[in-house]
Image (cartoon, rainbow, N blue to C red):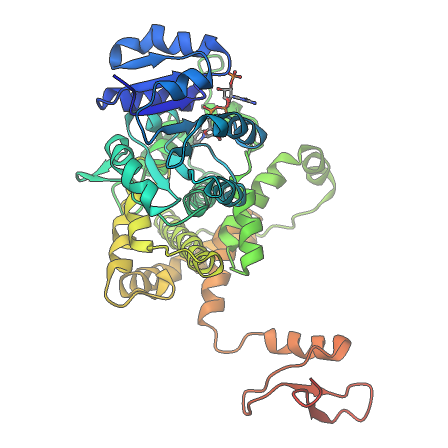
Length: 478
Ligand code: NBP
């Protein structure tokens, strides 16, 4: 019997996705550039379902039913183009090439357009959930043509995570939309992890709570509106003791955070779209600062903090929890706003309620909050910003006093809280009647004749700064 899907690239993600398809009753043809990984997969798990072992892409393609579905799970970047180049001559119009790796959405747009010229479908699929998710049910974000989704979607939905029985997989939009949404998911994940890190630092450095005590605090927090996978694993990490030293693991790990690039991509894209995603950007920068170990070593010696003695406000731990919730909400609001802007820029129809719904299970940012976010965007009147949805305006307003106390305390104690503080600045910026941007417009007009608009008249104006400083209409001069 021919296979319903072929998977090429059998490192950890590809092998687990292939197993997931097989465990769900699909016949899966498997291939890897070097046959060792194929054999290792089949030896360890060949009895989990129907696999067809293949040694070349030709053999892989020959073993597939039509339209052929070939899933690439190779390293993102050049390897994806290399495999596509080898694969395309072997395929027929209507066949579907699926890229399940973490490809950049611009690459996906380019590849989709190139394959469409050959009447082939190219589906860029965002897959979140890590190794375990790939095996047990990830959150899946497929882009590409709707026609390709009809042939592929039911299979992806079957292997995806389920939230109360609903698959965490739905068609996102055309070409690179799936990979774009996955990228923003990862950006939000960076911010989510950073705000948890800031809370941990405050509880440790300001309130003196040791990791084991904090493990209990985070376990309790996981029963509140913060309930999420990341809070759950934070409690687990903080409670873990290093076998060698008997110290908390978090105390023996080097405090320099790694990154693979999707956070950085999110920020670059946000800058290009002009969307303020300060929470995600500050998270990426915070990881960058943590990695500047040489400068940090010098900074510890030569830079004075002049911190103040601060008596912690009563209920400080609860204050930190609320500040964490409010900052997290801002990062989600910013990420979702970015999706709205990208939809306008790239001609995608992104349904934020559906996107929030498929992040409710399987993926790294899965959280109870996402069910409420989904409901906010499913309402008849969609909020222009998540924070404007009545439930969220109310929730964040309730957290504001604690949020301000926490940021002020952190600043006085010299504890960096880049996302707590920048998220509060974003919130206040959104609320403020007049921003100092008016002054910036004046400066721009003075040094560069960039013109400005007035609050009391239509039109565009310029002050003749180097002349008699009278104002002229700039509309006449264009
Ligand atoms: P890797 O990203 O480590 O890629 C290894 C695979 O790529 C191997 O099968 C390797 O074949 C193949 N490959 C390479 Br490298 N160059 C190739 C080429 N020129 N032609 C053909 N095959 C080539 O694997 P992974 O960690 O399983 O991740 C796969 C994708 O999924 C990536 O895009 C990753 O970013 C994404 N992703 C990973 C995770 C995660 O938690 N790891 C989560 C979500 C998404 P070989 O065995 O012959 O060297």
